[in-house]
Length: 185
Image 1 (cartoon, rainbow, N blue to C red):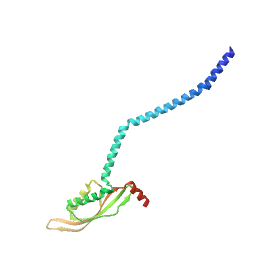
Image 2: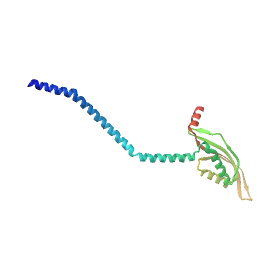
Image 3: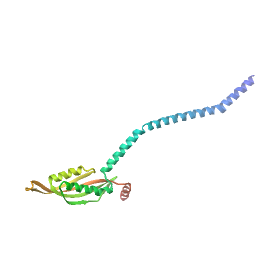
Image 4: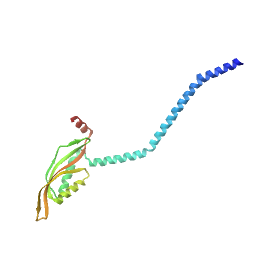
């Protein structure tokens, strides 16, 4: 009977350590993997639940980009912008004596497009021109303003003058232009 009991215990021990324990270790490992996968699923579900929020943020950023693109034209839109500056000046009652675009200056992802402008007219016409340029949908900075030939016209009751200034607008550079600029430097 003792031999039978000893044989049964050794068979049970061999069964446990030979077959059952490796299966228990594998089960524990798989349970840990399952717990990790559940955590990942929960994290992904939280992200998926925020998808509408991310989509609305993306749409807002797209709208902001479109707005920025209207303020900074690309290469094709520069001539029409310069034409609109001229039209604004003529609508303000100014005579253009000089309208000379200068060479662009690359500044990272954008380029400055300077234009020398000389106009003549009354002081109020010049002021209205500057206000109208400031109200354009594109960014245009007026700088280096010099007043010359200031004369008072007694017949018309106004002051006429000549104004020299530098109008600077900006445009986005495309990726190829940015690479070319980096190669030049």
